[in-house]
Each structure stands twice: as C-alpha cells, then as structure tokens.
Length: 162
Image 1 (cartoon, rainbow, N blue to C red):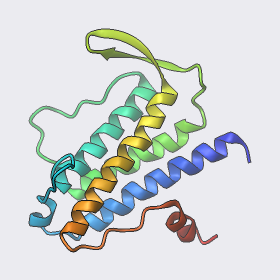
Image 2 (spheres, rainbow, N blue to C red):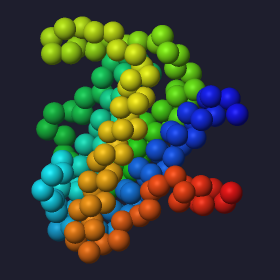
Image 3 (cartoon, rainbow, N blue to C red):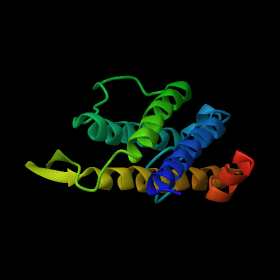
C-alpha cells in the first residue's frame, strides 16, 4: 500500500467514528444531551458541537488557508446539522489527507503573531482533538447508563466486512 492509502484509512475511520457517535447521540433525550461529567469539555451537546466546529476550522485552514468561524449568535446546532457538517469536513479531510505534503504550510495568527504551521500538524490535530472529545462524550454516556458505540479500528474493520 502507498502511504496515502494509510492516511486515507485513518481519515475514513475518523469520519466513520464521528458520524457513528453523532448517530448514537441522536437517540439521547435533551436531558441526556445536556449532561456533563467532571473532567470533560462540557455537556454532550456542547462537546459534539465543539468537535464539529473545530474540524470545520481545521478543514477550512487546510483547504483555503482561512479559519472557519461560526456566525456569532448563531443558535446551537442540532444533531442533523452537526452530522451534515461532520460529513462535509470529514470527507474533505479524507480527500486532502493524501494531497498534503510535509512542506505545505498555512499562516495562523498565534497569539498575535503570524506563524507558518505545517498542514500535517492540522491533520494530526483533527484526529487527536476529535478522539479526545469523542472519549469524553462516551464517558458521559456511560455515566448516564447509556452504552456508547464501539469506535475503535477493529469495529471499523468489522463494519467494512473484511
């Protein structure tokens, strides 16, 4: 396999995991979506929205060089809107992962200083960030007595039917 095949697999799994978690959370009540436990980002809803918005920004920076900023005062996203956003940015990251070269950079305002940041760092952050927060959502679900979905690579492999 070529290295881009590995990256494509990683980002396809990442997209699958995000969508599977959103699908699982669609069955939660409003009260459950508002639940939070100590040591996590916030409520299940807020954490899912944070995952989706951050990924949209990583994708925008990689593909256009510009950050994505959700309109200030916009109402909170529902599961359907989050799923649509995750599908779009996740598919975009799948496509871009194989195109990004180690030397590709994007300028980011880092505490008032413009810095050239390798796009590979943004790709790495997209996966690490979502993985961390998916685990937080799943821990909260567990505390609520709700079985979270299996999002590991073995489950992904099984679902592919291989």
